[in-house]
Image 1: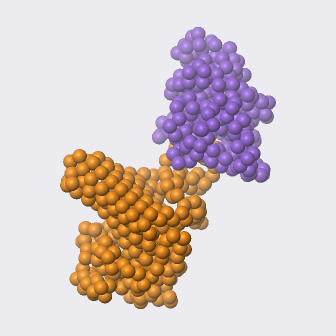
Image 2 (image 1 turned 180 degrees about the vertical axis):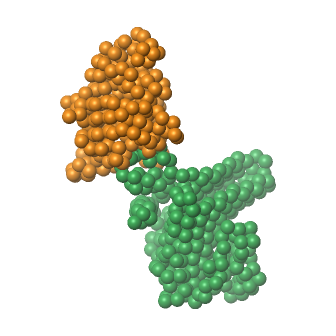
Image 3 (image 1 turned 90 degrees about the vertical axis):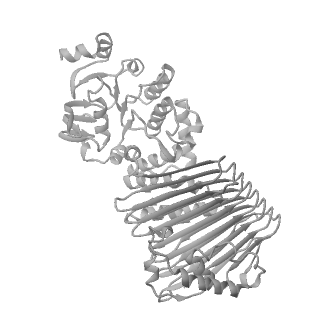
Length: 250
Length: 372
């Protein structure tokens, strides 16, 4: 059985339909890349899956681990193991990165019936994951994403993912705006989290990221529909021919 | 001497009467609920924690003629006149010349309705002699019932003194609280006021500071109101002499049908060149029924000064809320976290660890209480 099963998903924002019938099944351990031109609905799909109430699902079903995902609040989705790395991570002045992450981890652990981590254990975990992302430890005591550079924000997302260890990770254009060094760090962080139990959806506009995070499947999204699916070679094809041709021939 | 001042104040109050909303200073705050309540006089229950090196005595036992009622103007403010005419004793805090008082001096004023509405007029005089250093905490606490606390505190800081003043107001939920803190700063003083208002049904705080050459004056304020609470903060900073700096940051959180008023006056006198004044008032409005009136009033007569002011009124950031939720934090907790984050910089400015912890706890209790 698939971990995530999307059937005929339609979603709109402000009365405008963005997703026009998405079908997608994702199994544990799989990495699916979703590519497509700007405005194709890639980010909308990511946001709908994470529960952003700006988007209205007008038709279709999403089943996650046998449960009706669309009925769940964003925090319940997170507690059940869904994580979205934001395309534009939000700045939260006045809340330290450390406090935020501890509150998040303990909320998830509580939901799972686990004891809260004490300060020492938590700090140990956090430092290990920061080293993985080659992040400066001073970022822990700074307010969440506040005054972070673009690269620091994206790394902070993957760092959070490493700490929260989701079962389904959705990376929403995590590569955009990164230089090659930062991209490599982010990709190696993501790769270290690959596991047979964990699925990932990698939303990207550029093929470049997929040189470092090699997907099992690639889907091309255009005008709210998946117009083509294939293996990792599809990404290379796209690189050669561009989206225009693929969208036209679809 | 005191009797003559009392008589003058009594006279003055009978001329002024209670203010109405036609009075510019009281435009957004009606004291009608106070006027129509019949109060009986009660003695304020004051307790204090003295620290080695500082002296605390009853006003009646202290040689205070040169200070008492010479700063807080009973000629202009009817509530100051009312207090001056009626206060029963009060406390005199004296920090001797050059003394450095390490631990905070705490004054606790507690009130309660005694089966029927009562009124108290707590009076405090703080004199910090030149070169002294101290932290003073005034707490206003109260139980249930309708009562009226009408305190006046005069604080006189001598040259080069360093004074931190905290006021934590957690009156009962049907209480009226109309307070004046009048501050006179000597040359090169460093004064910080932290004015925290959480309780009371109808609350008005006046904080007035007159600066001398080289004084540095910081006014921090935080108010958290819900239900039908009304809070009015009026501050006035008088840059009477050159080279003084003032930094003011008042933050408010409004829920329910609460109302808040902020009025910040800054006067820069003609001779007060090189004044550096900054005023900020930020409000987080969490409900559609809450109302905030905020108004800066700058009067600048000198020409070589730097004065800035700004006021903001905002709601919780939905993006921030979603971000927290998407990491597993429940909606209520996420909301409280963001509200607390808003108040955070004021809380962090509190230097007394025990007070900071207490305030943190009070804020969280109040935030949680709102939705139970």
